[in-house]
Length: 120
View 1: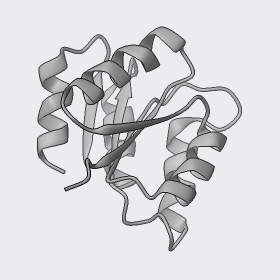
View 2: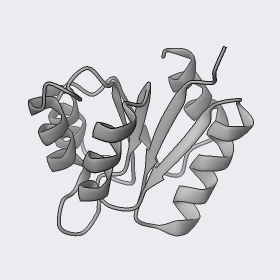
View 3: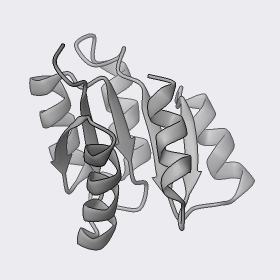
View 4: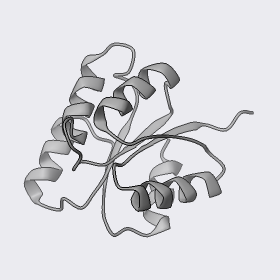
């Protein structure tokens, strides 16, 4: 059986590499994007099993990218888990309204990410 493809999106290289390592060490195939715009393109091409999406990114943030992914018939079924430093109740509510399957705040432990992967 082929490993499930997971898209990891973060514009901060250390955060991207950390998340990529956790997901890869768990046995998943990891694809990455460093912007919301790139995430939308990669998701449409690769159709990953799950997207770990940062929120705070330049130009197209994670919320806008997720809104666009949900509006596209080709990508609307891909579950999104936000991994972000934004920890306000309003951010969590907005994520739920966008249909997010999970919300992990930075800093996080590997187990928090692995728990999200198990739900895929």
